[in-house]
Length: 259
Image 1 (cartoon, rainbow, N blue to C red):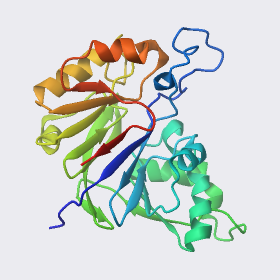
Image 2 (cartoon, one colour; image 1 turned 90 degrees about the vertical axis):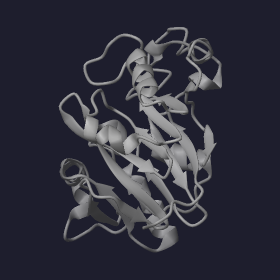
Image 3 (cartoon, rainbow, N blue to C red; image 1 turned 120 degrees about the horizontal axis):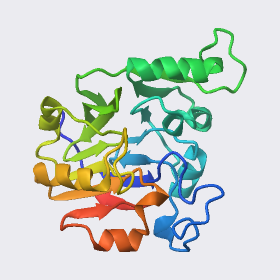
């Protein structure tokens, strides 16, 4: 059994697929000068003293890596195959070059099919020089270890699409979901920090609304819950955050948590 080391979690992005501000939108959230309302697409950086990994490579991946000053990356873990979660994969080639090794990439079968379709050139037998080099690892329900960080996969549903959430020690990260079955919720139980997607206040077909995410957090009796994958429709960060129940918070880009 691998004991989880101390971790630093950085929110690389906390926005939904369009990001915030949204292109061409003139709403008060998109026009806000408050940095809390500037949201790149959702992703996190997980770091121990020895190991660095990211969950998802968004279309903003290059900007996120530069902004966070990430000079070493050991692995990428994917939640699901939607474009706002995989589109930045090409930029792992910089880490290939400077680390002189392939990038370990963990994904379920559905996501692996999408990666091979969307990034076919990565998997060609005759590769063009300089394209990313990756080692694909199949995720199922079994726990695994990346470096010194133990990982527990959690199956959730984005309408009918299976999505993988991840538990790292006392920290659980779940994005793009609106259903979690009881047996999978048992894997979340006991976390000190839970991250859930909370797209907007109005009900959505495939994401938790803010009230649904709050209800789930309270049902699980989480000490601290942070909401992510936020759209401009949720409202201004400071106003929404000030109305949240105790122990619940809106995440924001570059927020760091120490565990």
